[in-house]
Image 1 (spheres, rainbow, N blue to C red):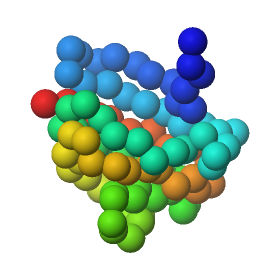
Image 2: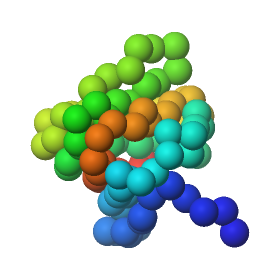
Image 3: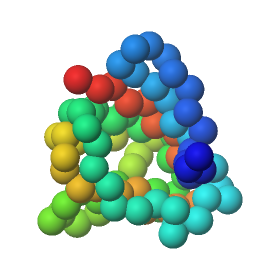
Length: 92
């Protein structure tokens, strides 16, 4: 069983909340792709948390403000900041 760098809370069939706590290692936040299109809403992000999409510069994650669209099979990663990062994800 793979240990994930987040806790996962299923909200509905196509939506969930993920929490990355302050002890997650930046080495655990690897480039990856998802099998479905996703919209990511930032609920809370401590200072310095960023999302980087393939071939783009990292974008700051701002609490209750940032929304990101990630197409299926697009490489992306989180970049660790201070404190926790909580995101709400909807899949299509």
